[in-house]
Image (cartoon, rainbow, N blue to C red; front, side, top):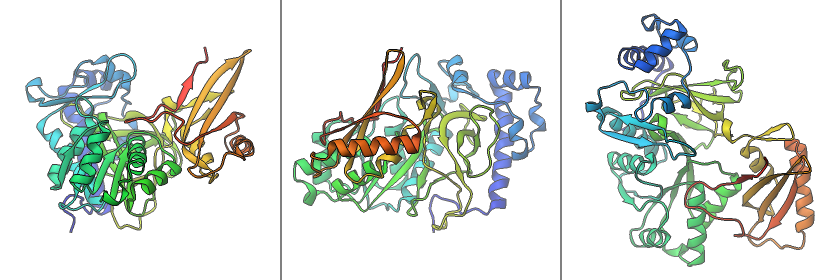
Length: 426
């Protein structure tokens, strides 16, 4: 019997979503001047919204809406009811700050507890948290969700490799929560210090960045774990825990009673058919402080309409191919990092780490793709391997690039999200 994940029929889920959408639209328009103005400009009467059948009539919300409302964008409750803020792990300019009521904090913990349950953890597990604390949502989300779930939280945070290794061995940690890059780095350190026999890890829950299947298998092997699970999340939707892989490892179940996902064409903004790739758009159903209505996430994915063999009734989306703003335009071709990692997966001699350097020479764009050789693979055939990868890249992604094979460990490692693209084109 599930403690945290409801088993809902399609009819019951639709009823929850219809009710949640009506409440969200009514709440936002009644209490947020920004939403009132947005709906007024679109000529929409919130009282006419009956349910999901009216969703595509509503205006989109974007990251610009969050920036315009700085420091508390789209606030829909009195400031006295705000008990916490979190912010995006920002890029340029001011961060996007999101407000939380106590109910929002509790819902955040609930979605994280659901992830731990779906991953097969029990209250006897010891969960080591290797993500950032502070304004970023990840640390607080993993910890509060772990405490609600009832497992032991070990809140080390990002970095601090020496402390992480000590806690892994001394406390017998069974689950690691981190980025894929941090999991890979931890695995390499475990092997380097010959700690494999002392580590009791069984599970890794990882997210926050793109990854390749090779990268995943590398840290699974190095850490000696049974299974790893890709987790979804974004600051705008509470934080981590919006979705998780089940043990079927065929897409991520998302909590459709807490929010609705649409997939739209990023150019036309029209819905795409089920199973087709596009930009993920989310609408919250329970958020109080900063509700989101048709928020353009920038994440590129697709919905998986078929039932999951695991039996969980929650719908699924595919793993993220990338972000619309991570897209590389190279000689007129649109490329997502996920397409590069798919090419790498075809070659067993390659490791999991890569870096793309984009430059412009004599008016022509150039791409250098550096990829680490797999551990144990010899360097004698590097030139031949590079040529094979370049050919795969050209046939699979339709781009020509210089490919360079480098030694294992030659590319920079990161405690958080790895920076895999350097673009010096002017």
